[in-house]
Amino acid sequence: MTDSRQLLAEYARNGAEASFHELVTRYVNAVYSAALRLVDGDAHRAQDVTQTVFVDLARMAGSVSSEAMVGGWLHRHTCFVAANLMRGERRRQARERQAAHMNASEETPEVDWTLIAPILDEAINELGKTDRMAVLLRFFEQRDFHSVGEILGSNEDATRMRVNRALEKLRIGLKRRGVTTTAAALATVLTVGVVETAPAGLAVTISATAATAGTAAGISTIIAATKTIAMTTLQKTIIGLAFTAAIGTGIYQAHQVAKLRGQIQTLQQQCDDDEKRLASLAAKPKPALHLPAPQVQFAARPTPPQAYNVQTNLYAWLQGNPRLTREQVESYLGKNGRTAANLLAGFRTSGDPALLQEAMQKYPNDPQVDFEAIFFGNLSPQDQRQWLNTFENSDPNNALPYYLSALNYFNAGQIDQGVQELAASSNKSFQDYTTDRMEDDEEAFLGAGYSPMNADALSLYSLWLPQLGQFKELGSDLVQLGQTYSKAGDQASAQSAFEAAANLGQYYADSYPGETIISQLVGTIIEQKALQAMDPNAPYGNDGQTVQDVLNQMAQERTTLQQLGHQTDTLMPLLSNPDNVTYYNRFIMFGEENAAQWMVNKYGQPSGPQ
Image (cartoon, rainbow, N blue to C red; front, side):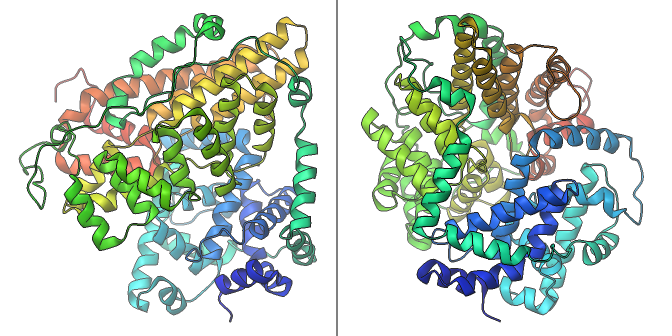
């Protein structure tokens, strides 16, 4: 059987429709089945998601990495497309699953497929890359252990163990969502129920539509149609409007996760003062772009690096902010190559801007290079605009570059262009590369000689989150824009602006693997401010709630997150080294909210004796 990557390469190179049709035929059942689960069994929505996924594959065929597994790419993209479609419903279901999990006390040997189906793909996406691929190959592509092992580069016995370990991790992820089972029962239900037959004729329809989308003419047609559909009331009304002054505040400085926890109280105060700040936004000048901090001079350290003493608390050791020297980074690059990912990891783990400059020169079309360049490249306004355009071209199906571009236009007073960028972000997936960046940094620390435990902790502790401030600023701009329309009597455009801000906040308001509490707080704040500007009695979402109902829920969520942040600050120094490792692993797998709740449950309230 021809390798799927070869088929995709043939289509990208020659436009071979037969190759693409073979890919659709090979994967349409798996994609449709995942979509059906993700849209709660709605067959029509599942078909829409399936077609969108394959259209995106055709359009992105030339940019999909030659090392990427096509089945894995399709599954993840299906999750992204369906998540955007069902975001509001997912939030309600997540709360219900969490409540069910809190009441669950015993595991049951069997599980009802109707319970596991809506949350299966979300749990699979939390697995590590190799574990996720093992599950997808074994159960979604229905390969035997020998075939899975050949793809993963291991023997049959090792592959069987890998799949079993992945199933156990998946079982834990499902349990966290309120569905309890055993790994054996989970394997059975995946074997029997995970892949369903797509409707007759769907593969043929998709092949024709998606293959056309891969041609230049097809892309132009789809883009034109998309732009027409995306012309919302907000865009049609805003284009041509001139603002009297630029909007916004300064660029949010990059923060480290551990230090961000100490700033939650400050963030709370800033949010409480949002109304006053919004009133004065127009009068504030926009500061020039600059690096987040001056170059730090590092003291010499022995090679290999001296790890923390086993008698020393890991958290206390991290307070020294261990960083890599230039010599350590160069040794790592010499052994592993000066790829885009490795240069960026070297830049982040050492703070040496020369490494970022090298990445920008060698790999200007790598989306993660574009991301780092925009925030840390010390760019002029003209260069900033050029890199934003490059970012959009390098990751065209990611909403993030379009949001950043929209903010840049708003700050320059070019409101119509900003609105067009927001419209272009419609129906795109969202990726801020946080998990990828942490994994690359971990490899750099490991390459410098740190132990896996040290490398895990350091990759999390040194995490930068510059995009949060940009999102908060863009949300404020949209809220102010809506208020301007409301005062002018244009309630339809005002509502569109408020809804755009609320949707922006939802990207971070819910907990995801590797997400920080501060990210959730920022997302919640953006969404709250948007909802507070709306009619409190108006319906919101698809579950019969009003705007005020959602605001009440979010107020409680925000209080809970703030309390967890405070408790984390107090309890973190008390963790034993093994528990520190558990905390960081939970952080990566489930997000900081889950990790913090685990710590509070184990160590008790911070005021009590330890």
